Image (tube, rainbow, N blue to C red; front, side, top):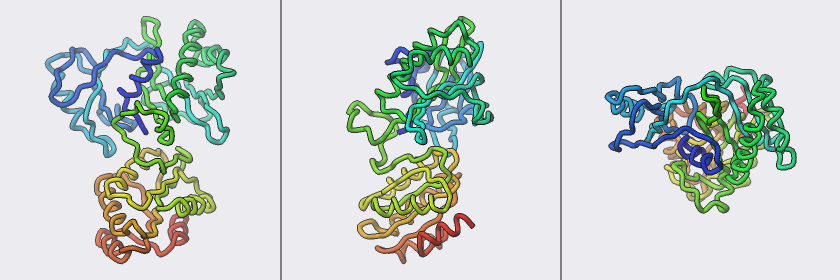
Length: 351
């Protein structure tokens, strides 16, 4: 599950990690005081560049700006709330995150001495990286302070890292990203923004979880957040075969998804919405053998997803079995190709 900023910051606060004071505002709610920063609550990056973050200094402008942000769609997401936060007196911005490094089977600390909206412009080799465990965490603050050129904040960074590590592991997170980590003119560190992704498969350990992003399926597994091809199939065997075919073709699968035998159109569309959160996915391979699940229902979901999500990656669709002829007609009416086999999908994908 990908948390909204206010949800992630609420978790940080429970672990004594400083965050700006703020209040969540929905349409019709009482207005907070100004000045404030109005921030769209959507589960996607790039809010600032898209106009989803506005600094409001006059109370007379607040209602108008909140309404603007509430009605601004960002990459297919329309917020139901905004976060109004105090204005920080910013001296410097840094980048700090904990992430699951799947190739090394470890939790990795990733940092950069320049945080903010341009973080994605930096080459991967420029980032500070360090495997972090409960055993080695005691000395990591010093190395991070040296990298960030913050020698006076060694102890503060050490405390913050220990809290973040505990927060990460307690929460069954796969990503905890603070960007920017703000150093204020008053000499305080605070999480200016926070993204958190939680492991759906750990939901059985967290009866308290109640976030706006609901668990789509225990059968949606992230394989590589940097992967370029997403997969949708029904049945664990077919889903694994689809992932294997993508891998054998020399491509990187982003996920494993078994939609099961009773998936509804809404649930399938939600799966598409989760897939587009992967930053590098440029193709989706859909491999369905209709038994209980109806191929025309899957086709309807594909059409609905394409209509709803303007930046949907290229689709490579194979549907066979229950009501596949009806599915083929629906897809043809909407200009979508249907392939006879998974092999044909992959051949076209790598052509």
